[in-house]
Length: 252
Length: 252
DNA sequence: ACGAAAATTCCGAAAAACGGAACAGGATGG
DNA sequence: CCATCCTGTTCCGTTTTTCGGAATTTTCGT
Image (cartoon, rainbow over all chains, first blue to last red; front, side):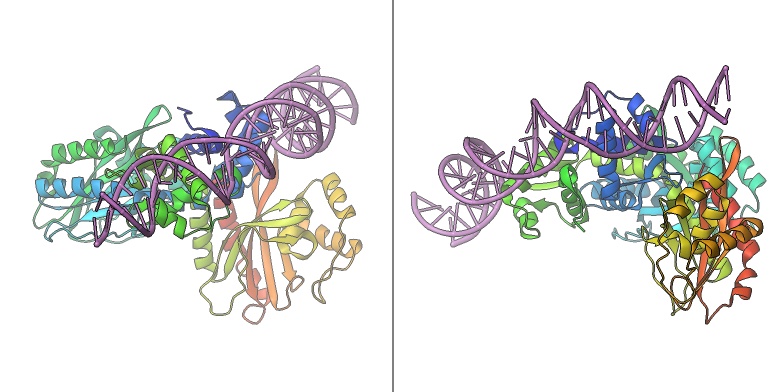
């Protein structure tokens, strides 16, 4: 696990903080490893100085800083590996016959990492940065369903529930009820909740972070409801789930 | 850009490789910086050894390796609390129509931990991490007002009361008098006390520490006095206070 | 096969990381 | 309210890396 050598050893701390559910205190980090406290303190200070971590407002904890998010996006959009993912995405688009996209959650929104259009010959439209609110997208609801409850509460508490269509979930209760169902089903639907006429089916891409499996990304298929009803879409579920497993494999 | 210090300096290479369209050769990386080749080679080897980079199939170039992708997903799926705070800040800026910032007190100064600019052509650009003396900012006076008396005395005793404008509070008595008022009002104003032409309204972000509620951060709105008088600013008080309540949730 | 450019290895000097011990400061419990 | 404990921070002599110019090997273009 901590096979980082030399000057990069502080990076193991970044990994551990990223794997934690709550921002960590120095003491918590000290408890989980045999690194002496002064060394830990020095490493954390270095990471803070580098802008990768920052102290939480109360000054006692360490949390992921913007520069780390930037780095993460840069890594994800980098070639060879992004190309691998893009190929897998293309294959699943071919298999299901509809456009697909890959998303991650960022703040209270869902960000597109990659997307392949069904009707077009392959074109690498990196809509990196396209963002959709979490309450009206299949991916977003899926992330909410699969994240630890504490985080979900923190996100849901501050949502504004902007309406986009007649079907957009209108309030906290409706969202939480659907999220409960989604958690059991392991997939999420968007029934024209963001764009009228557009339906969407999302499945999770799981990865072990720390010791527990986490939904790190979502693979979603979207189609005009005129071409595919929600029931018809569900027929594609196995294909999507297999593709999601393959995508998870590219992270090994 | 390359403000990474000490043992983390090799990380700048990871950032640069991630930012490149194509996998990089050592020579390309050498051309873009003044790091000697042997050092570059050593750093790259360290990153490869850590599993963050790998050599491309032709053995000549360096590209992102699986562990870096894992790290990236871990960072993004650990939704930074900072992102939630930033979202909330964006919303309150939208609501009040002026720039807002979030500050904490650090020593005898106030530090900006986040900031969102309003969409006005005329605006003052502060940046994250900027620090302002406690006696001439709305946030600072607010912190002083809401902290335990013993601590306030300790801080005030050592203040130097540097003057920035004609309105800057000039001495201990003036400051303590205003602080007494602020403690009752639960909000603080800065009437051009730091920058001429700039007024500011701050409200507390409260959080229970131990058993007593503490002002752990301040949410402040600032505007050119030419656009908003102090009275007009006070109309935004309820919006700010509600946002402050929401922000308290993101501070755990 | 030859020359040029890139990549890699060497190694002594220089710099930094290391971590035990001591210290500070706030929370906790009596 | 004060004593106590626990967390976080600083100190500093020792140890361990890192640094990078020069030399050496490998690769590539012609």
